[in-house]
Length: 363
Image (cartoon, rainbow, N blue to C red):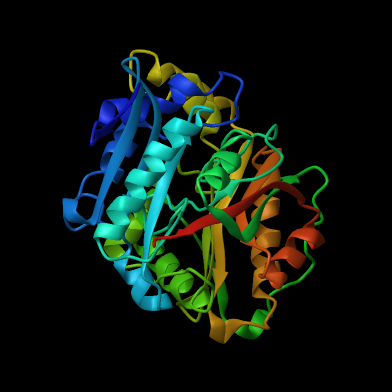
């Protein structure tokens, strides 16, 4: 018999370790981070426990599935939707367990008066999004959603349909085609690296440029300073100041690239827990890091058409290569974002994984 448990953080964290094989490409966030995500008042997305809950499915005393269900009110307001969202849907290949979890999430959304359940949205304002739908043998990067091949089938069998297709990318830096665009010397442009001592200033610059540049993108919601720093603040522990930068024009931020070392190798080795061996694994990661990931890049709308994006990407790729990185991941780009997809093609990035959002109407 499969039982449903609510707000069991230990069981919730253990689910993927119980139900995914060790050779699966899934990588768990740190347990401490998961607790932060699931604590109202600490995660600024949730003002109170009424904004979300989370469930685990348990069989013979062992958690084999999990899901979060929540409401992002700012997103509903911005896009004219009335959605509840699910996230962190991880499950054994067991349709009964999946149905129990998905029905519990749907019931929560229905009782809150929502007419649709959509996911994955993974619990911050800068949300990890989607369900992986192909290339399941390809290892992902930090901030990418990865899941076993059967997860989309569990969702579809429970009445969910895929929509909003996306692609992640990987670039072999040895083969990268570096853009040749240059910023005009008379334009007043300067690059400001993201360093620990200027971190908060640069992050506020990054937030302003992200909010402006992404304003017209589907599903994007402008970020408050509190929301942005909640997630970005953890970057100080893993920051490589050679990789991320803000572009200023006459001291005003007009462009940003946030690129960090890929943490997945460290997380796999430490099993996403803090223990006696954690420091050893982290030091080994720092000494041997050769993969990085671009979390996002953006140009303020008023500065489009000046070659800024090509120049920023060129600088970032040169910095990565000179720092000894070999592979670069790029988080999801929607199929409808033709400009960014063309940019990936120009620099020689290859599609890594396909993702879709999944939705179900709540009757």
